[in-house]
Image (tube, rainbow, N blue to C red; front, side):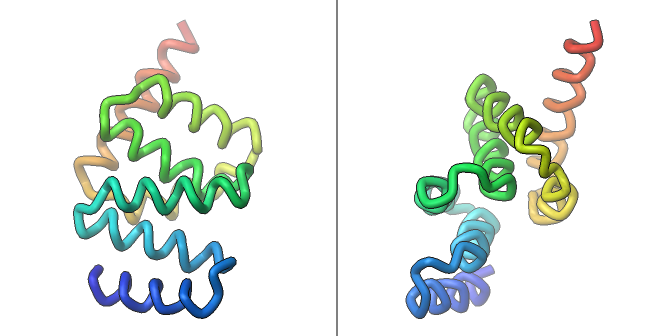
Length: 116
């Protein structure tokens, strides 16, 4: 993760508008345990493009991780409304095991609640 972060940071320096490099930086920060820094970077990327499902989904996980269920729900709803949920499976590979379980559990509980 540190090497990926350094590479992605260099790419962002070369092209500040490169969204993919920003997301890669955020993913590397998350993997290194720097959740707050990853959150700030994702918020910056979201301010430039508020309808990007990959950014919203990552932010949703970070909100759930912090215990902010309502905010996490809102972000997940936004991803669903946009209609681009294809980003969720690749993102699940990036999440740490405990966070992947948190997201799956949360989505399952919400789905059961909706069905009831």
